[in-house]
Length: 235
Image (cartoon, rainbow, N blue to C red; front, side, top):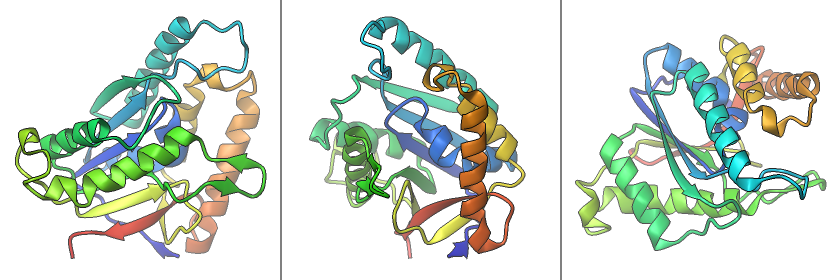
């Protein structure tokens, strides 16, 4: 495990649900933003099915989660949030989604793109990675390599752009760790901003976030970290 200490000029995080970026990479995004990076976020799903109660109102939940997302993004210093409004559970690695992502990538021209690792499915025998995460992860990979960099893919989406680095979160094969010791409090606040997802256990969620960040930072000798699978595309 090696330390990832690059602060990109432009970073684009692409995640499925309104709280995914905060949980997966909130410390990294907040740290980079505090150091002057232009950090932007794409959220594909509308969050309308993120409830366990059958009596939940999907329309109200969607609006609530949009407000939570805006607040959390402001806390992290994200300069722009693009919400694609796919209904939860409907994400597929389709030409339509890839074209949309290519357009966003070419329009912003980020140095680094962050997103979920689609190869990670089973976690410790107790969790199956959400289908939206896996499908979006494949779409992000395909949009970045090779589509965004090659002019004959979706030419209507603008001039091609080669992303330098991919950082994949929620991975079973991490090889880099970002030191988020200075931004861990911001990450915690951003995660807690998604109150509709906390099951009235903010204290427990805070404890889990800190514990996981501490474990992630340990191999690199830092107090708190976030780990990723790093793919260097522009070499």
